[in-house]
Amino acid sequence: MRRLSPSHLAFIACVGLAAAACGGSDAGPPGSVAELCKATDAPSCTGNYVVKCAAGGKAYDLTFCGESNFCAAGACEPTKCTKGARKCDGKKVLACSDKGDSEFALEKTCGASEACTAGVCVGNACVEGDKRCGWSGDLAVLLECKQGVWSQKTCGTGQGCDPGAPACLAHVCKAGERKCSSNTEAAECALTTLAWKSIACGAGQGCYDGICHAIVTGSEPDIAVADAGVTDTTTPGTDGSATEVTKVDSGGYKETITKDVQFEPLNVLKVYMIATPNPGPGDTKLEYEFIAANYRGNDKDLQVTGDVGLQKIELHVTPIEEFQTGTFTAEGQEAPDSGIFANDGSTDQTQMQWRWQATDYTITITQFDDFGGRVKGTFSGKLKDNTGGPELYLVEGIFDIQRK
Image 1: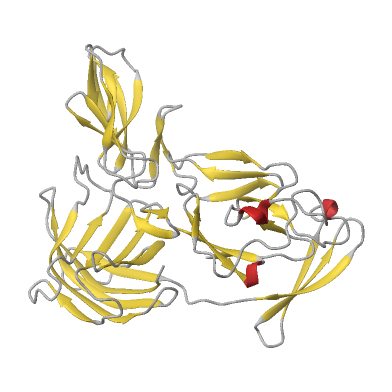
Image 2: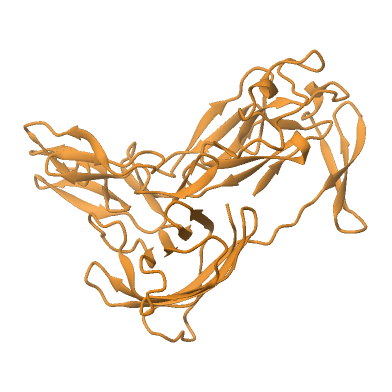
């Protein structure tokens, strides 16, 4: 979670939570704001980030949903398919939405002299050496014409297919992630995760944490020099709860600001995914990077998800009542619609959503708090390979995640 908060020399994100907050003001530069939001405002979405009002309306908390989730109505929801992926249904090209918030839908039908291959319309006759980018399940593939026939090469782990090359290239960012290219320009990671797309900020705005935002009223000296040659000297507070920051701008103005520092427990989702029930000396735990814990009240479904690169995992405990704890097993049928699903990105998964599915599992929920609290527990299981490969085991799985 990232917090956007003001100081006399800082910019504040204006992401559209309150229309009045983004308007002009009699004080300060054009477009400046005195208050960004209300504490009672419901969480909202900016791109793939959940946005919440914080610091008495003077700041926003931003939480990135990750590649296997999308932001909807102020919450991170698991994707229904891989964002931007394509697949074939005869001569029809079916596409997953850019957000991954809907199932595959018809995008186009290939022409009379074309065929659909790896989600791409290609000519029945091809030119030697011609290349295209396509998809195989959740993985990008490179199509190449060899001796009049289209061949497929699956891009490796941590790679995508660049349609401009075309070639399999390493990821440079995570889809939907944002950063600042300059003080007046933001950038968003493309769906291919191979390039950053520029987003110019509007007049009177600046970029902070990848978001274009308005200027805070009452700043001094002139806000125009705030980012010109600013030097920060940071000193830990005596009680560890605050940091003193001394700012010196290019005009020689000095200001000492006390910034509150809030420490939150790190979200954790780890497990051994191995060929035997017992970890060996060479085995290491998978540590997932983008992690979420969500509860769908209508379905009484607690979901724990995580991904790192092409490795993905999804735990469901269904049905379960909110705040309920306990142990749920496949054999006991305490929550009969529960399950564990996983992808490792190493094999052609054709049209399958999940390569791995648990045939036997134990999920123990030890803590199930309200929104903003923690969801904690352990899990283990035996995974069936839906591509026909050998079984794998989930061993010593743990999760400790803030509920969204």
